[in-house]
Image (cartoon, rainbow, N blue to C red):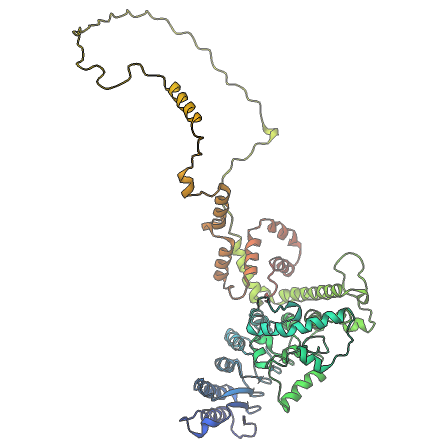
Length: 612
């Protein structure tokens, strides 16, 4: 392992970056038998508190990129496991350079420290650099910690963080109740886990009926493939699978056990966005089981300090002086919701800490009447209570943000309302049908009055003309052959001959049913099937496009294709085409503008980015 520590160097800025790049490029062997070819590829780079600045980081990133590009399948030159860039006056411009390096180090990087810099997202260019940096970590599978503390990120940075987080694939935790050795699995690892978890399911059934004591033998656990549960009641990793194999199943920001965002000037808007991430982020003990363990030393001590000193679990957001009472309440409720959603153990775990200590704080009732005390609730009722309180607290913050900063402060809100304006113009084509006449409007039909017609004046009858008929007399002629055409002299009637033929056929062999040849070759679908098929491909909307097609067209038109999910796009289009929503909006004209916008966004399900 090569640890490159530059904390004691006298160089700073651009010169220090050039020195770092030179040391990295030395690892590229000039030939296969050179000394550099036998170096350990693992690199831990520590450039903390050296005033590296953006210029120096650009040189450092260039050296890392060239070294990674020199890797080949037969010989690995570098594996960057730790990168410490703390207190180096880095701005968002440095994030663009790091975004080019991290895709190459996605399977190597385990610890990233960017704390104490000048990462403030306050312009469009900074937003693009921040988003590119976050998306460059989407393939990271062994990252244990990312430290962004001490940077005044701003509310927009947290919104982009939520957007990128929501678009990542969820982590596939294979739980015992979802496994079947014979059923379909998503990966070979899932099949192997299913075989090992069969022993866990059997032991769970035995414990449920009381035939097994709580104390188990570790040797027996290892023999049947059973794992011990952690203090949160969550199944830990299996010893027979390496962390690298488990890491292939989890990638991106969702797989990072520790995300440090303390002292980042969080306000109510930032807390609103982070509450969605916090409620869906898995607990550290589950995520640490899927990454390689930290080495003994400063890294392990740092991770242990988060568990001992900070009240946060995984997502460390305290201390943050900008958090008010409303923001702190939302984050606390999100932490409780995460405990119930991701690691439920019992009813006691579903009850917040203040209620377990005998506090008198009551949840706000969402239904008429007084709600029972949480200590008397079932597990499902406790979850619903916490979820209702969290939704209510979020709605208050959302209304405050819309009133203070407007709907344009959030990209999703801005795009959704623009898309709604275009959806109002989509109207189904209705055939012109004459308006029905009410029964009260039916008048008696009066026959038209016709004037009397005078009889015509008789005129003298014309004199009849005599017709002269001349006859031509032809002498009698007899043919040479009688009946030359062979015609019957006295033909029988057609009806009689048909009846006789039918009687003969009935007396002979029984008639066989006639089979239509056309029906054998082509079977025409029923009329109803044709109509159903036509409705599937034809719509009464303009150009006969379906709702989903128009939703995608309008989303592209307003720039919301990368912001809104397919369900949100359809929801906006349907809301816009529904004329009944105009009546609801008319009734809400007495409310504040922020409240009206909030209700519209809530009805369209566009208050937040939809997390997969």
